[in-house]
Structure formats: C-alpha cells, structure tokens
Length: 253
Picture 1: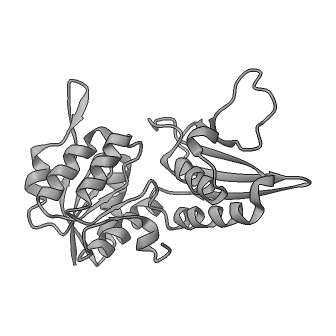
Picture 2: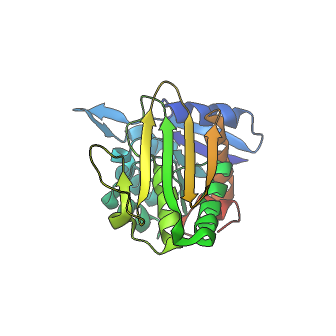
C-alpha cells in the first residue's frame, strides 16, 4: 500500500486524484492539503509539512508559484514527489532539477498515458517526414486554464524541434495576427484555444506537398491524468534520486 499526500487537494486535478485513489486498492491518501493565498500569492501551508510525515510520496497539482517551496519542503523531508503542475518558469524548473539530486521526482506536463505515447510518436513522425513538412500544433482547454500554450503543447513542440534539429526558441511561432507574410519553412506553430469546459485536446499537424497528417489526443475526463499520476506515485517509491518523466514510468524512455 503506497501512502500518498495530495497537494492541491481543492483543485480540479487534486479532487480527481483523491477520487481515483479511493478506487485503487494499492494506494491510500494519508494527507490532503492545498496552497494558501496571501496578498494574492499562493504559499505552501504548514499542513504540508505535517502531512508528509509517514507518507511514501507527494502528488502535487497546485500553482507553479508554489512549486519551489513545495519541492524544498518535500525534498528536505526525503519524500519522493510527483508533479503535474504546469507553467513552470526556468527558475522553477531549475529548482526542480536541483531537488531531484536529493529525492526521486516525476515531473510531466501531462500525466496521461496516451499523451506520453504521443510525445514519443511525434518525434518519430517528424524525423521520418523530415524538413519538407510544415508543423502546427493546436491545443484546446477550458476557459479557466491560466497558462498558454499548455505544457503539453510546449513538450510536443520541443520533441518535434529536437527530432528535426531545430531551435524552438528561434522557430516557435505562438499564434499569428495581421500581415505575417508567407510562412517560414522552419516554423513550428503553436496555437491555444480556451473555451467552455474542454478537458484537454491536442492536435499535431504535419502538412507537406499533396498530403496532411494529423495526430490528435482528446481527454474525455480528468481521471485519465489522475490515474497516470497515481501510476507514477506507485512507480517512484524506492527509485534513486533523479528527475524522471512519465516516459520513464511507462518504460518508454
């Protein structure tokens, strides 16, 4: 039985992790905490420090702003960590990497098994098609999502850029407006849609002379992400300190 603490228990994802854990005989939720707002900024609560005592792993779906304090507290306690929080800045990502030298951490912009398979597939497709195909990524999420483009869309773009030997910082184009001129062949377009209660949709489009290939993933429920997080939580217990991805969890790395 893996004992987990859910950080971000009041959020959309935190609630689904707790609900799915109730149906998993191999998991027990021993703590459920959330960030506390102070002057409009999320802060880690003292409850998390108390909750991690005796826990096997912490599952975090909170705000990127609270991630540095969370990983500092959890790594100091020597507890493994699964982070599904998106929108991390470079500094926050750096803090995550440093903490992974002390405890094992699974970090993934998307915990879905299907999406992580997509991460793997798009690189292979891009490499096979080569540079003669235009690449566009379209993602859609609910109207309350705070970051754009999604962490999943960014990861898809990163994997495609790596497969093609391109520099995403130079070639990434995020939305278009006005007279932009003809599309540059090296561009990797990324576009965000925010509407209604869309759980999460991602389409990668490869368009070449006379044909188009589209690969899509549509999440019907947040439970797919919650179950992926629980799978990661069970997998990470006993692993050496390192920064892992869901590809590691699924044996696809």
